[in-house]
Amino acid sequence: MTSAHAAERYAELTRQHQETAQLADPAPRPPADQLIDTATGTVAIGRHADGTVARVPLWNTNGAVHLHISARAGAGSSTLIDHLVAAEHACPLTEPWVADPYGARPGLAARTATTKADTTTLLREAAGLLRGRLGETGDTTAYSPSAEHPLITITLGDWPHLSTDEETVRLAEEIASTGRAAGISLRIETWGVVFQPPLPLTTTALRHAHQITMTARLTPGLGTHAPHPAAPARLFRTWTPEQ
Image (cartoon, rainbow, N blue to C red):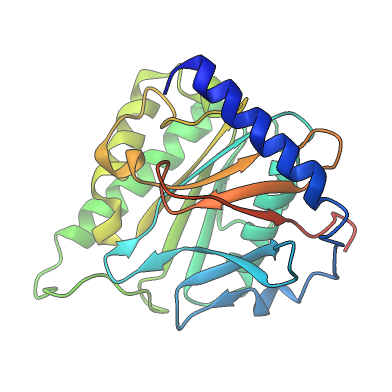
């Protein structure tokens, strides 16, 4: 997609957001332990303009689902990630890991990193766990989360900053490429409205990751979600931070 096409798409999304903002009145966020539907492997992230619950996949019949979140500053991506981490912390089938160079995430993650060096250490641990899961014998079916082998979601906040480290990129590439079958998903956060996979991660897995784009600057918490970059996107609004 060219920069001109990306600008046109952003302008159209902004127009839709302006029309939708007043229709999608924020409702109180459900309790964290009610956000994940284990039957479908999805998590609630807010509401659509018509009042229906907006949901994105954490896992499906093929295993873990990767996620790319792109946002403008102040658009609500931090609030969205806080919702996701809270939901995963409350569910016995999921285990959130969070690496954020600014430390702006709640203390609910099973593993955390607030520096680039700590992020590399966290990813080494994740890659070791991934290899161990893939090496287990007798596992001939697609991954499905359990209390013994929970789905591990790894959130990498401010990826442009973290991706300047070569080992971090290499480990993230490995997880993006093979994590689906091992029940380890990658959640990449980038700044600016990006309609392509976050570079330098260019694996097929990330290229087809579920997409969330937070584009509204004046009304935080408005965004779109889609199964992959080429799919139609649906507007949604997150719950407000204080709820």
